[in-house]
Image (tube, rainbow, N blue to C red; front, side, top):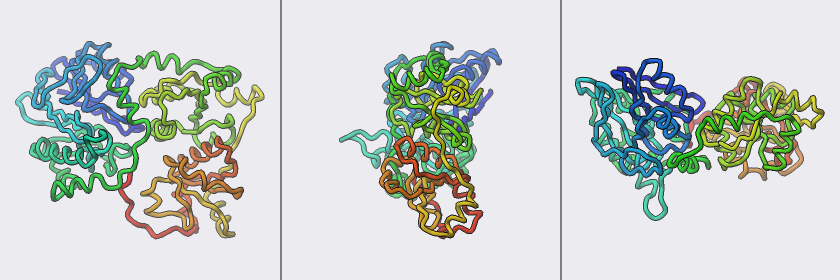
Length: 469
């Protein structure tokens, strides 16, 4: 029997490939289908099942496409209500994949259809569990995403989650391996480990949520510090419940080549946003005015989903040469299907056509430190609230990138605003957004807080970072 974790770091997402005796099952696949089909074909296996642990909020699954191309059956647990053909399994139902058995464990709490899949070997011995967003390494799924007005609160869902963990998962043998759907960096939890698998026995010892002394204590702990989820989450849930365009169609449209003139026409006629995916320190030296920089070499898709809340917003892309397909793919993974094309020749072609360019001033931390000595600098920290609370430049104001629109009043006067994050990625995103809003007196601090700490700039005393997500 083969068990393979297919981990995608930019989404902090784990999909799984299980194979036995020429049959395979895929758990929580990403939207592109080729990697799973090619794996099965290389081994001469047939994909029998596509198993979904729940309706995902942070990415769009490829379950429908994959089932059509492979002939597999899509499986959800109890309470699921997809609009496409799927097998809605009963709690305790067993599915055969070659000599292996997959037992369905209904584990509501993160969502009401959330399901864990227990893999039993040929002898019927429990080997591992695929927990989706029910149990992470170091955490559990946030219980606020499936609230329903007048029926379910986040406390209700947290209670269901407690029952699922204690009734279905914790009684399993300690040597069972836990394979979750996400790791550190995902917005689906608040305290996830960088590890992507662990034994259940070890998690019982170290996972705060599994160590809660009572149901009431558990509910209080898992609901503490929950900030609003990214705006694209409910839109991804809706897409995962229904049939959506094939990823092949999305890729074909998204990779349409656009000349500088064609790009201008698309922006004007379709109201498209220019999304520049180049690295921050490349972007700053010249970009299309009013474009937004979200670098591909970072948490690209989650930040797009956070900062461009409508997945139906039309986009045109500026990319580094050779990265166009990756950019469109990563956008499709989170439901941004309305990419209308990519600037052919990149920013060099734009400049060669004599088009206007804009720039952002970016200074090293050492220069920032020298200017701080003179006093009077307005410093804005765009890291997450928990990062700021743990330690920040003395006198800096907090304007978390994900809530930047709520803090625009901070940038109302004419003095320069020195913007930093942890390493320089988010601060350039913030500066590009501010410039697109007509706020041009911004200066990026390259290297962010990590670089600032290497200077003599005064920072606050360190406090343990909060678990706010």
